[in-house]
Image (cartoon, rainbow, N blue to C red; front, side, top):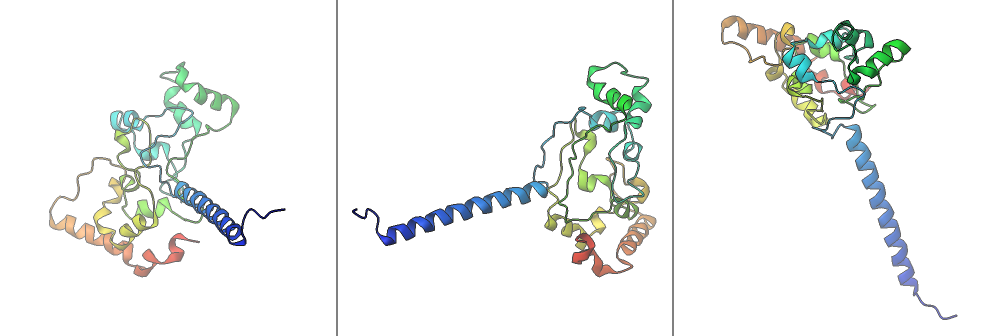
Length: 220
């Protein structure tokens, strides 16, 4: 039988197949990494209930901690349990079709399957209570949720973005009692305010300043 392809052509074909496979794998891994790092900035996910932070926070003035009850005491902010929703909606909009999943959740005892918007990879540890206690506001990471009809990620939560703040936290700090305010305009120039921001900055860095950027702080 006549040989159609030379040995060198066969080698080139194998190399081409291998290169195509490697490109495919790197693309797949890159897409997975981007998904895990929260690259879908500005994308509103489909939720079982189209909850509007713009209405509840911006319009009605609800404090973040009313729904996210564990943010001050736990590493997780906590997704709101159904009974919190029903503390209002047992009285208002009681038969609204859009709230049917909430009523079903209450009746069945099954939690509402909210889709997490602000996601970090599994290899990243983030403690909400530690940040809130030190005066890092919700808006720093989550953006102006009071202006979002449907919640979307405000930042990609990439390592470099986090490190920018860890290396210089002072511009983000505010009094701990103001961390949930969306429209806080900053420190008013006065000796007391200068002293307070210095104290907050000192508190953040006082124990072990180097730990803010050490690997084990976020990767455990």
